[in-house]
Image 1 (cartoon, rainbow, N blue to C red):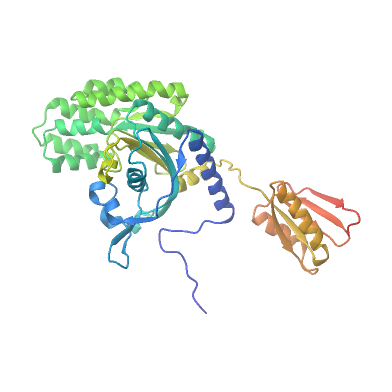
Image 2 (image 1 turned 90 degrees about the horizontal axis):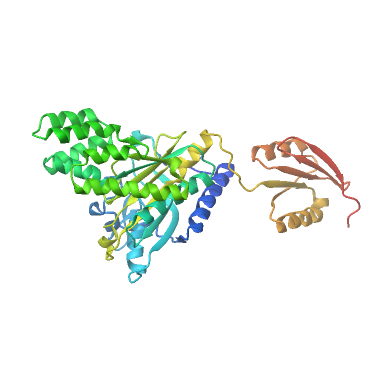
Length: 416
């Protein structure tokens, strides 16, 4: 017996109802991005390796899927779509002086270590606002994100906001070498503040800076914690970062999304190209962030256009997991079954054409006279169809509501 092929580790098939719901969620998110004036862009699934090289600041080279073209060039499957958008925007909009609003949807590929148990292929949907560095731009992205998550049915979620300059200012204020600062940064990312304390206690670091790092884990909460952050800010750069967050919050209240906003001054960016505010969205039912984003004012200049930018990516698979575990109903296109015989084929096709002209989804199933009606009912329930029209040779229709089991007999009368 020939062995059946299955998917490689870290990828999976998505089909039937799950796929239908995923497409529905993606459509709703995309609707919100369009409402804010963002235009669609598609970039290649793979790019030259240089687009994701270490200096760009995405992920380590060993986590990239790399391969060669016939000319010997090194290519890579995209682990992150933002660098691709930056590369495209720097070329396509080289002379544009007005802000560029782009949105996208596509799959990303990261070769995680197998023990991490995460998917290696994920669908991301995101938006990038290119060409403007302002509190208004920052607030727009955050408000649009909140509106999008509400649109798909989430009620309980938080968008955690931090600022790269705040953490960087604290690290620089230690006076330590770059290697040790990087180690502390890594420990903070992993919430290992005991490790941070141990390093600082064994180095000649000012007590005020040590105290600032001790307070850092507590700087998570509503807008009031920004006052505490301002008190421990070691320099003007850190103070400006906190001030910017305060100004962004004021605009977010105008958008009416402030209830979903939390500040986290201990947050550090997941990508090296982040330069200003950084944010992540969390909800119940998933252990990881469902959205990651931030400002990256120097990324496009690596591709030839010196302009500021900010963006975010929704990790759609994580969002779907959360929606499922929270038992949030996702509206998807409903399918109706028409079960017919050879004798009722003309009638069935006429009915199907009529339904489809009115925007109703119809699946037609031809049955043999010996087939049991229950088999089709079971199929309809399994595929989550909403109704079944069972056409009989005596010109009657047995109509079954597959949601509640109600049945109705319709006499269709004489048909040609």
